[in-house]
Image (cartoon, rainbow, N blue to C red; front, side, top):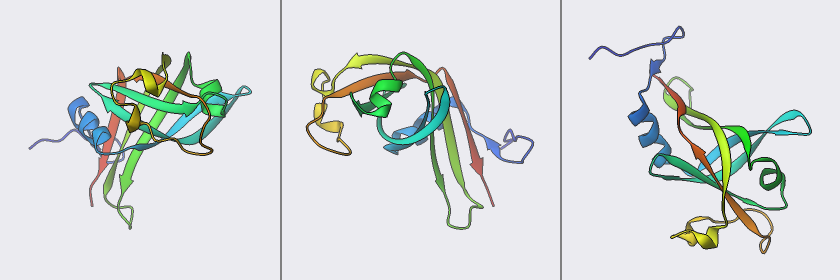
Length: 136
């Protein structure tokens, strides 16, 4: 098989491979802008079709900064010696779609942090998706 490689000799993953890897995980690092500065925070996500759904406390930093902004989301799984693994990055507009209770599976959005705060959900399209696989 002839694999496409980047300048670092990592295997460039195609769209389908990236989506398959995203579907296997639930925790991502989400990059937002807060006070005109970049900030990266952990978030729980779900892959629904080819969209990523991220839940957040409405009054938290993610809940205030994600909706209607451009965000990046990174998910990875690296081996203990960092010589194997993969990483997938998605960049797109975080569009508010409501709250977990409005979705077909509201229990899928486990809440981090203090319980009881209102939750929002944003949809991030995967039009801009890229991934790399690290092979020993």
